[in-house]
Image (cartoon, rainbow, N blue to C red; front, side):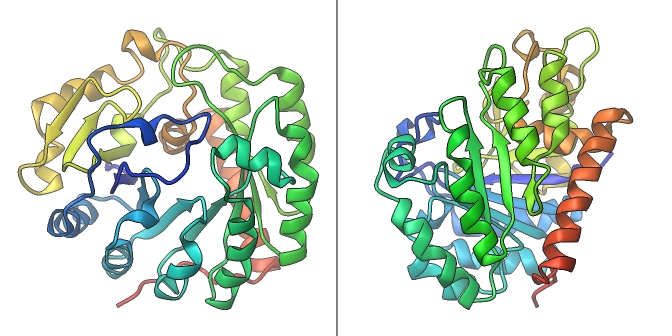
Length: 324
């Protein structure tokens, strides 16, 4: 089957110091080469990828993000970025019409808690970025990464979203290794919040965690099949970014990279590596669900359909469209 998602790490630079992320600690700092990104976008689209998520680090720190987005839209990709909003206002106008799924990270309804979680003073930047986005016909989703510590700080974030007719995404924090670090009572609170209008929670994530995540004997992960992970130095991470046992230099079209022995081996072992036991990393299971025919697939699709109905029909936000 063709890959669905191009997960493109265009930089490992970041102006946050998030407590649940270590990308900002990486050295040396690298920005993806412009020509390499443009070529990879073209060949990845031909290889079948439909979505591209430009990530980091903080993607807005790459000076050519708008160029990448415009080229991706021209190829027919659905585009996505997640930002801490520190640099958003100064880039809002140039991003107009280029980001289909724009996510503003906001983890609390108080400045003190949000800034502590993010390791920087960025709460006010999020609030300032909402009108800047809306005035440029961008409809950001408020991305609330929930933990045992901040789940009770959701109400204020929800009120901000409702005031601006924006969606809130409830995303459970994940452990790169080991069992789920979110307690069952916190998940139950998130499930209750998800019943509110305008709140998106992929309930397949909760189901996956209830069953202990991925299991080696009956693997659910399709990270290699569904996703191409490109690093800032133009290498493909296998089997995924967080558990890369190999980083293969891109030597030609992405379609050629999909046939290389290292990828074939990683695909055969996806979900079966020793470190895959108990894995529940959201960003790789989300596209993996599309390759399963189980309750996880149906719960994921129902959540996405509800999201689309509210955002594009009820809230009348602009549908993703191609840019020429």
